[in-house]
Image 1 (cartoon, rainbow, N blue to C red):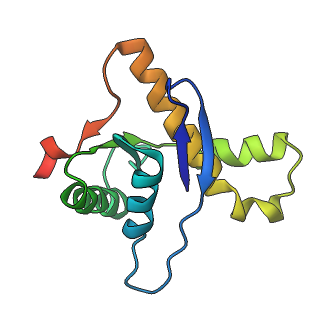
Image 2 (cartoon, one colour; image 1 turned 120 degrees about the vertical axis):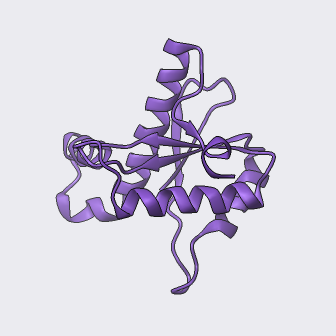
Image 3 (cartoon, rainbow, N blue to C red; image 1 turned 90 degrees about the horizontal axis):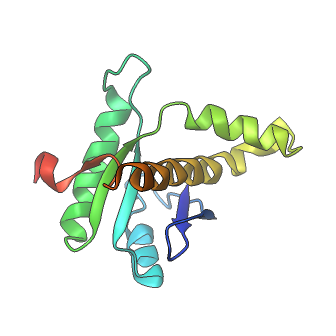
Length: 140
């Protein structure tokens, strides 16, 4: 799921889901298009850390995806932000909005992306510093 904020970084809005076009497609070209279309200066990527705090395969894949993006978009800050329980919250929000569980699959990634971005924006406002881990300081 892809979300973006308003220019003041106050609210987050759903943009789209990126659909893989083939087995080797990781959606990076679509992300690059959004960067260009919206003049993006920072990308927040959900970091699926386990509830225990351990980093499993999904976290490693997210980190590698962020590294690949950072190589292609060197002028854009790429940040990994803890996304624990955002999918659960997204499903709860959709149920609260009256959406049937059968329809969640098409919307849950976008709602999760909005929640991850909102959490990052809120952290930044409260702490006067960016949320998460800047990927350039982690592995490049």
